Image (cartoon, protein in one colour):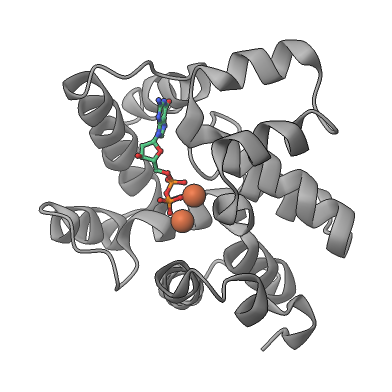
Length: 188
Ligand code: DGI
Ligand code: FE
Ligand code: FE
């Protein structure tokens, strides 16, 4: 499966991350069937397999790499939200390395925060990341049920949960994270 990505080598020191990546793909393929989404399977595989591509780098390495792709202003903005950096950086790295298209780029770019104009592919990556079979945080079963009931409802519950978690941990909320929640809240 997509051997040219050499993911086993890329994630050789991060076996759990590699398994998570495969779990995201499995869940995304399931959702594509469940909801008859008709997603492009090449894009789906690329986005899922590569969504955490930049997760292997330290904070310092990530900032150095990010500076090649994003303006000073955006780098300074993202420094306030360290957990979000790998999604933005990952999108740039996989565009450079594998020439991924805009749909895959965006799905990876926004997989941590979501946004209000997410494509179906982006939504599927966003929710699969949270509920794939290797995830085992306390409420994961609730999120699985929400997503399997309705994809947009799943996005809503997950974005709500993310905001609640960040508030509990006193961590700053990136504007796209808030935007995702506000936008989907209107629908449910
Ligand atoms: O990379 P994964 O662990 O598979 O999952 P992810 O890319 O969804 O990252 C999840 C982490 O990102 C989780 O610890 C919450 C954090 N996060 C998501 N949105 C925001 C955020 N952190 C901050 N500070 N602000 C956000 O808006
Ligand atoms: Fe991630
Ligand atoms: Fe992930």
